[in-house]
Length: 551
Image 1 (tube, rainbow, N blue to C red):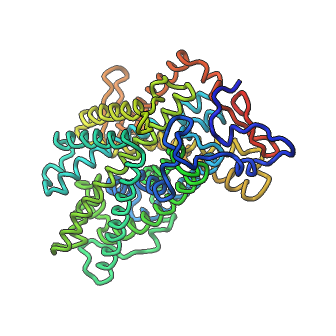
Image 2 (cartoon, helix red, strand yellow):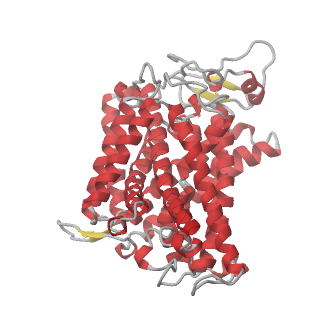
Image 3 (cartoon, one colour):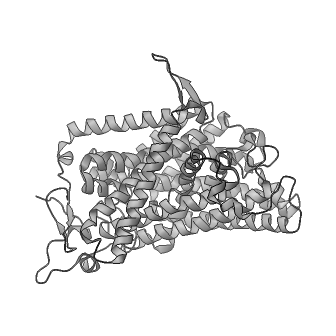
């Protein structure tokens, strides 16, 4: 028997009279439109199209992602970096459509967790969708905090501290940022949304300005030594050095695009919860494609890929390529100095924005897991006034701070490269499983129309295949410790030397597995398929409520 059915279009019972197909039922199904609390107690209707899209773009942190990752991508694929930007967009765009279609069917804030659980069973949903989301967010938080800490000092002109990732001052400021942003998320989704709109506008405007000025200086012949002429060969896949370089670059670029799915994690707090969150996610990926293609092409041409000066392959700033470009692009005039400071502020605000929008979806995922009795009930607590997750928000912040300190200590401050790459392991897992879940859920209606076949079947399926393919190859690639920034020697037999990326991936996966096995003993109901609501799609396209996991 289904208990406590919630307001979801997939919780429909069979209508009287003639059967309606799935799309017709969904049009008549209720959606979040007002400000009343959602089924999990979150503030319904708090976000509109602009705020939801801003959340999607801000969560990817375009400026931060480019600053922290572009140098590593260039080191791997060289001049073909703009090509990788275009190719990595494909699985992300397909994945955004998978999320859009699943959210249209079932706007549950647990997103990947609950969709995978219903498609492939509770354990797959818990580990791949739930833990995959949690782990990716936790690993990302460490690098966000470090970038935020460093850019505070760079913005203040204290370059000696800002350029030193091992500085205790950087660590302290990074922790303070996590605390302040956690409080903002705790106080309300609308406070966070308003902040994100402002931060995203600053970020996109400054990236476009940087790109345009760099292109103008190239055109008038005032670019620095080492600059390059833009060439179509940069977009030619036959110029890639090797398959290994291609896959490594793709994996890094997946991180650069990752984050837009925040829009579906806050679906229950969005107006028209079935349509706006998914549409905002797709729009976010398109905005990112334009921004990334313009920025990478212009910056690569202006700075070149040399190993000296502002060259993108210079190991001295491989983990932060934007901080050294300000003066080179904008010059030393008063206006140039202002723009240089704004560039630093942009990366700082980008790290702040993505930190905030990483706390939000993680807390919603664990709230949904608690609602469906896959986690302790305390994770589902909602503040009676602010209508935000309480324990889920605070606990995630505390664990993030602990992980940041540990990773900072173990790696001597050099955590960005390995943490970013380890994060993408779990991004591929939870976004990939969502693609498979979408195709499986809609399998009975895929031949009904070309749109159903492409949008609900082929594109989601390809996103899952591509993301899991990247995951499998990356595990193989990082078995070689030399491909990680940090390594450690096992203190026990067989005393293997293991790279930081693989270490992070293994430890994180084992932690999630141990937690899941513990929950199977404590909360066996969920793992027997006794979720709070169950859904299925019939061969006629009818969405019905059933008593078990749809198969």
